[in-house]
Length: 115
Image 1 (cartoon, rainbow, N blue to C red):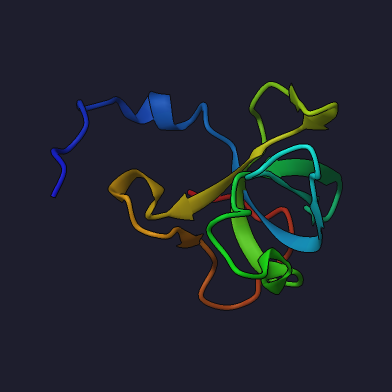
Image 2 (image 1 turned 135 degrees about the horizontal axis):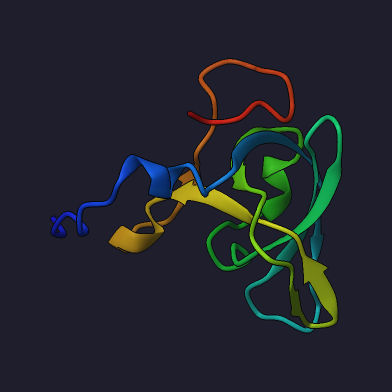
């Protein structure tokens, strides 16, 4: 098991805007060997988010229609000519296991904040 990261203050957590969104579509990014493009519905807005899950799942489209947690206040980042506006919050990547979605136990309104 990895060591616990350095202690932070509660105000540091307040900087991260994590919200529930429904993954509407998953598309291949042909120029990349690991990225897929998600369209995610957050209720009041939708985002394009690039996720490095192409090699992690036999069929990345299996997550379409699922709710998951996303960081929505990261600065946009362009990769392979596509601008990504957020980050999927998944479980396992840092521990070297095949990641799984971090998701609510039951459906909640899109855009619901974590915390």
